[in-house]
Image (tube, rainbow, N blue to C red; front, side, top):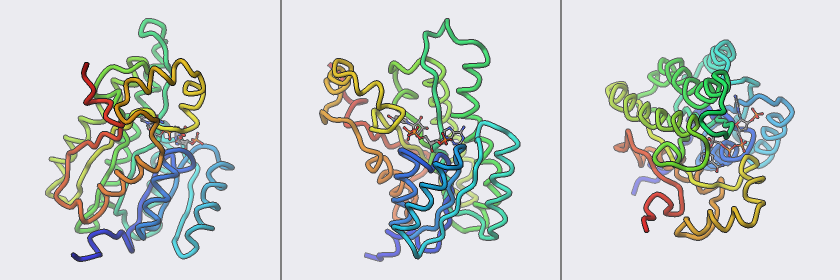
Length: 258
Ligand SMILES: NC(=O)c1ccc[n+]([C@@H]2O[C@H](COP(=O)([O-])OP(=O)(O)OC[C@H]3O[C@@H](n4cnc5c(N)ncnc54)[C@H](OP(=O)(O)O)[C@@H]3O)[C@@H](O)[C@H]2O)c1
């Protein structure tokens, strides 16, 4: 076994939404495998705190952060210009930043549901396209999109979130095929309930939590590190023949019929 197949030494990774939750866990996991990591998020203080915490744990790694709203076209371009200025191209892009506003379908204003698409889908498509020339500077590089089980079946998130994640999964398949000849693998993960700040309010309701657990064969809520592990696997040279795939990180939720 060649241990290099299970390492990311010398690789540069950009993780959007890297200041909290799943994104921060992904950054930590990639650092653990030897990558240098660039983080992006909107809140400068939280981003800097996350960067400092990771730097303390991985003093030998390069960790930099850039304040950007990936739902904003200009800021997306600025983010990728900043990445380009490192002069190393890019080995890994993780499109993790996402957001939601949960309502009945008839209650959304047009601006509200379009914004959900902007942050979950259009950001990932545009960042992937801008990153393409940086990714193709290397013989092998990859994109991992953080999708959701809501893009594969109905869950109670509201329709636009599920629609945007479904499109993100299809984007994964399309780009995987289109960019295979460029050496860029494109994969996704689909988490079910993961313990982060965005789920903490809902999961604090014991009745709701019971309902979620009843529908989860493994009988517990997932941890950000468990999503990060699947993302890291998809980035490794060991996964070099995996592209266009989606790994559910869902405690068996999607496989649970009656
Ligand atoms: N938690 C779950 O149960 C679950 C399940 C399925 C899928 N997911 C997906 O996993 C991803 C991460 O979710 P999470 O639970 O880890 O959320 P989280 O704990 O709220 O963290 C979200 C991260 O993304 C950043 N972010 C949000 N909007 C952004 C924007 N417009 N531009 C740049 N950064 C932005 C946040 O920082 P700022 O707010 O400072 O920008 C933060 O760093 C999302 O795509 C979500 O849809 C989560």
